[in-house]
Image (cartoon, rainbow, N blue to C red; front, side, top):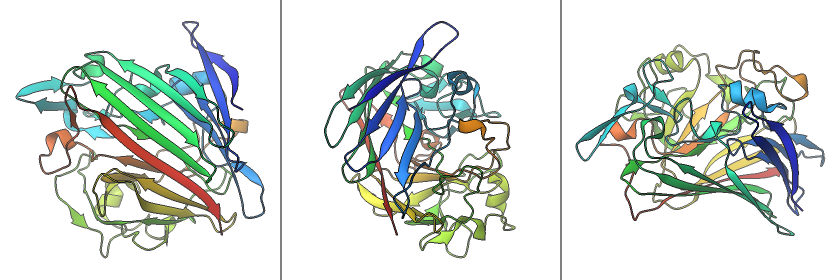
Length: 351
């Protein structure tokens, strides 16, 4: 059964609702119609004790004011676009600027700051929530009226599955992603530095000091970005490396292997203290690994916890940052009559 509760109200009086889903495996999540946001995700440890493993807020006004994108769906374009400019078919578009001189995560009025239409999908084993949003032509500077659906499903296989679908009436760009901050310990007062991370990526797309990709592909061999085998996040996070310096830690796109637009296992995350193990599947060409470098204690989350430096991490399946300005990167262009689709799955177990 899916439970619906009033979560709060916006200043204009609009009501924001929370939908709690519980699968037959015991996995449960609360999802808001504001920002299509995962507020909580309760997962069992090796002793069968459930704990919330994502960061988030208890008050809707914190989501309205906040700039950390906790648990939200990001769009129209996840990650950064250099100077907020791109061209399609010879026409240049100027997007809103909200990250230095660049455009980040769809702009200040991105998909994380709007109310989506929510439709619960009841199931005895795999409950789901379908969220729909229509983005108007010109919103945040993007061309085309775009209709988007995101379906969150909690499966009997202990998975949080996210399926995206989008169509447009004018040629545009689309690159959605999910922005949960994970902490598998279940204790957000602890850092994620002892989590063991594996990402099946031989290369990164290195960035400049504004975190815009240079257009190169750098091999991870012998660098802090080599996560081809499970490695503690804290092992190289403070290395004397220019890319680490630019990101203030890890905040980079890794080029996933075997990209063929099919869903495949691309990353794993393990916390030895709780035994929680997460496996990430995606059909996307890249994943942004962000190690919570801008958390500084000012964001006060659930149960009154102030989220400190590196107490959560993101694994954001995506097309590459600034792809519209990099012809050698995968294309994010979607034309009328075409569909944007994406699937990302986070699967949980213990060991």
